[in-house]
Amino acid sequence: MNVFDVIQIAISLLVLLLIGPYLGSFIYKIFEDEHLLPRFLRKIENGFYRTCSIDSKIQMNWKTYTVAMLVFNAVGFAIVFLLQMFQAYLPLNPQNLPIVSWHSAFNTAVSFMTNTNWQGYSGESTMSYLTQMLGLTVQNFVSAATGIAVAVALCRGLTRPQGKKIGNFWTDLYRGTIYLLLPLSILLALVLSFEGVVQSFAPYLKITGLDGIEQIIPQGPAASQVAIKQLGTNGGGFFGVNSAHPLENPTPFSNWLQLISILLIPVSLVFTFGEYAKSKRQAWAIFSAMAVLLVVGLGVSLYAEYSGNPLLGGIVSMEGKETRFGIANSILWSVFTTSASNGSVNAMHSSLSPLSGAIAMFNIMLGEIIFGGAGAGLYGMILFVLMTVFLSGLMVGRTPEYLGKKIESREIQMVILGLLLPSACILLGAGLSSVFPVALSSLANQGPHGLSEILYAFSSAAGNNGSAFAGLNANTVYYNLALGIAMLVGRFGVIIPILCIAGSMAEKRQAAAGSGTFPTDSALFVLLLIGVILIVGGLTFLPTLALGPVIEHLLMVQGVTF
Image (cartoon, rainbow, N blue to C red; front, side):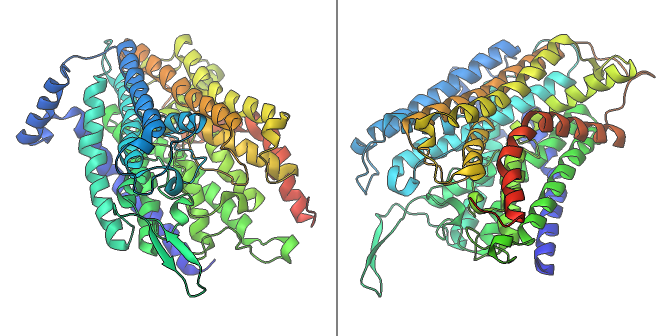
C-alpha cells in the first residue's frame, strides 16, 4: 500500500463528507418543500397523478402506506417475471436469447424488486436488451425509491407532532424517482459513457484474435443501468463479472465515480433525517457511528490483505483482485459495497483473505447500516438507535424517549422483529444448507471456506446486498427458491415493522426534553450505539463466523490448507 492509495481513500471519504449534508438538505426539500420545484415540473407531476387517479393531497396512515407499497412491489415482481418468461418472443433481443428458467426468473424478479440484485446467471448471456431495460433497470429505480420513501415515512413518524399520517406513498415514490434518482443517473450515465462504458443497441461483435480464435464482445445499454445500479445501491450488473468488466468499468475515473456513487445517497439521507429532526447534531451522531464502523472495518480489511499469505511465502495475493486498479481499490470497493446494500464488485470476494471476507460478511450481517442501502441503511440504523435508547433507559431508570416521544413496548417489539427476521433467515438458511446434499452439491470448496460460501450467500440475500462469495453454484432450484425467500423476508420483514413504528410514533405527543431525558446527540450515545450494534451482531453471528472465516484465518496463519 503506497501513499497514493492512502490519498485516494482519504479523498473518497472526504468527498462523501462534504457532499452529504448538502444533498441531504436537497432530498428533504424534494419531499417537503412544494416551492422548491418550478411550476412546469409541478404541472407534470400533477398531470401524472391525474392520469393514474392518485390524490396526492391524501395523507396515509401506516397501514394504508404499507398496503400501497406492497401492491406496487407485487406488480413490479410480476412484470419482471413475465418479461423473463417471454423474452424469446419479445423485441430487442438481437442475440435470440431463450426464455429464463422459472426458478431463475422467480429469483431474479424477487431480487430486483427487493433492491437485492442477486444474480445467479451472467447477464450478457441470459437477459435480452428489453428485459435488462424494461425489467431490471426500471426496478433499479423504483426499488431504491421504495426504500427512500420508507425512510422518509419513518422520519415523519418520529418527528411530526401528534397525528396518524406519515405521508403519501405514491408522491414519495414519484419524487424520489423523478427528482433525485433520475437526474443523478442521467448525469452519471453520460459521464460513464464518455469514459468508455458501453451504451448500445447493436448486436454482439464477433472478433477473430491473432491466435485465430473467434471471440464475442458483448454490447448493450450498460451505462444507463450501471449508473442507477450504483446510485440506487442495487448492484446488479449488466455483465456477469459486474464492475470488473472493462466495458462496465473501463478506467480509474469510472471506478472512482462508481465507488462514490454507492454511498452517496445513503450518506446524504442521514443528514435528511437531521433536517426532519430539526437537529444537525442528531444527524452527526448517527453519521459518526456509521463512519467509525466503516473506517474500522476498512482498516482491518486493508491490514489483513496486505499482511500476506503464509501459504504463498508471505506475499500479497493478487488472485481475484482488480489488477488494473490495485489491491487498495479492491478492498475499498468490497467494504463500501457491503456497507451498503449494493451487490456490485470489482474483485472476487471469495479471493479475499479470510479476515477481509469476514469483514465483508459481517457488514452485511449487521443489516448493512454503514451507511446501508438507499433508505434501508437509515431505517435499519434507527432500529439500533431505538434499541440503544431503550437499553439506556433500563440501565439508568429513565423513561426511554427519542426526539421527545416515548419508546414503549409496541415499538420495541417491532424493533426486535425487524432485527431478528433477517438474522433468522441467515442462520437457518446457512445451517440447513450445510446438511442438505442438494445444497452441498453446489459447493466449489470444502472446509471452512465452503461454509463461508453458503453463509455469505444467505447473508447477501437476507441483507438485500446481492454480492456473492463466488464458487457457489446458486443457479439451482434449491438456491433460487431458498435465497428468494430470504430476500423477501429480509426486505419486507424489516420494512413492515419500520412502517408500524412510524405509525405508532406519529400518534405520540412530542414533549420537550427534561432533566430525565437522555441526550441522543452526544459522544456517549454514539459509543453506546456502536456497542449495541457490535454486541447484537457479535452475539448473533460470531459463533458462525468462527466456524468459517475465523478458522480459515487461523489455518492460514499456521500454513495449513484444506
